[in-house]
Structures are given as C-alpha cells and as structure tokens.
Length: 280
Image 1: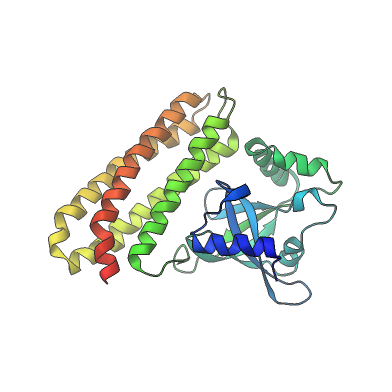
Image 2 (image 1 turned 90 degrees about the vertical axis):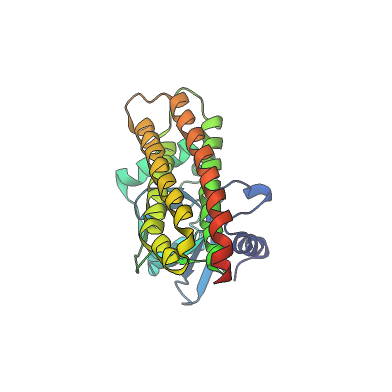
C-alpha cells in the first residue's frame, strides 16, 4: 500500500488528469504500478519521468539519493511488465533498465533539465538507475481516463496545454545561450503527439461525427484546415530544435506561435464538438 503522502498524490493525480499541486506543481509525473517482487501484489507509486520520443518514457530510481534502490525498482526487475498512468492514458509497458553509455546519456539529459538529479547522485554511492518504459501497443495509445467522449477530448487537449506550458517554462528557466538536449526531446515528443492526435481525429473521429451530424461539415472542414496549419507550425518547431547551432530565441518564438494557434484551435474544437460528444 502507498504511504499517506503518496496516496494523496495518487488521488489528486487521478482526479485532476495528471495535475498535482504544492511541491509537485508543474512537474512531469506519472503513476507507475509494479508487481511486488516478493508478494506478487500491485503497488502504485508516483514517479517523475522524462519524455524520450517514440514509444517510451524514462523514469529514474533516485529514491531521493537514498543508499538503497526504491522498492518499485526491485519490483520491475522481477516483473518487467508494468502499468503506466499518464493522467490521460493508462497503458501497459515493458520496463528495461538502461546500461552503460545509454544510461549515462539519459541521466546527463535529466541533470541538464533538473540539477536536482545530480544532487541525488552525489548523496549516494550507488549508480542511480534509469529505466525505459516501452508502451506495449494494444490497438491504440491506451485507455483514456474519462467518463465521456467529450471529457476525453478535453483531457487530451489539456495534456497538450500542460506540456506546452512546461516547455515554455523550461525555455524561460534556461541559460538562454543553448537549447538543452532534453528540451529538444521534449519539443520533438510534443510534435509527434500532436501529429498522432490530429491524424486520429482526421481519420476516425471526424468521419464518425460527419456520419452522425451532416450539418457539422463546415466545422469539420475548418478543423481539418487548422490541422494542416498546425502541422506546418509543428514542422517549423521541429526544424528549429533539430538544426545545428539552434538559436534558442528562434525556438522560443516557434513555441509561442504554436501555443497561440493551438490554444485557439483547441478552444474552438471543444466549443463545437464537446456538447455533441457528451450528448452521445
């Protein structure tokens, strides 16, 4: 069972689709459920994570710099299949402990994004493990934690808003002269997520709604056109953070441009579609 402090975070995380306050306000958190190495019972723990693009995220077994690995790390070593809750999606994942240079590169990115990880490493003689959680695709990105289709759309949209807010903050908190490796990964992961989401809407959700509500044709056409425009902005951001010698100011400008355009798009989509989806 989680301790009282962790249980409060878990409850708030689930109630607010991944958002928590106080000390963890604005942090990247997920809920990791492992199977007890000795007991075989499930254990859920809030952990910080790093976006890593593609089909995986990274978690770090820091235990606050403790001399011992956290219990959840021992559990996933014994039972590598775990459950991940992102606040929006819940999915099964395969845990792989990174070794050697791959681990060191990932940990260096973590330290670059948050020096607190280095402080934890300095407190202990153990090498703090980095674990990759690979999404085990089972027909989609995972179950959406929502009570209705309309709530699901809002939850996914809010996840993009939250990620953009974090990226903007990270850019503002940087030293201004470079664009860090982890920040590049965060931007590229966001780009891929937006592409996947809009592709799913264009190919599945919008045709479904068009069949149910023919009068929505102008709305859906506008949304598809906006998807194309946002795709152009996403590509501009991708190019800005991928190019050698990237100007951080140029990258920040692209993030601001994408944020403003995407917010207007998400708001319009919610106004037009959420009432219909909730009615269903």
